[in-house]
Length: 52
Image 1: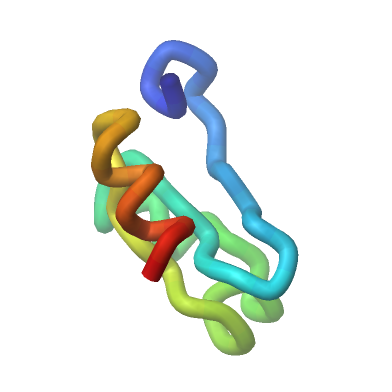
Image 2: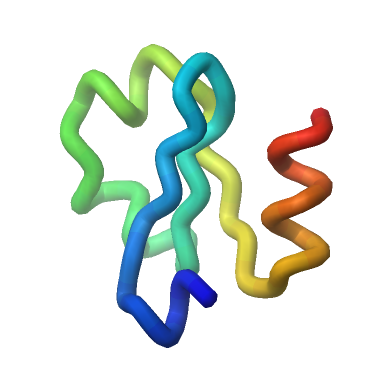
């Protein structure tokens, strides 16, 4: 899903999900520093990140 849209998923009060670790440097500092950043490539990984 994120790959197809070339998107970042921001869960309010939760993690920010990116497609590749290299994408971390492209995030604004507020997203990198205040909330966990998780690499999630599949729907299952996105689901796990939201639930944790």
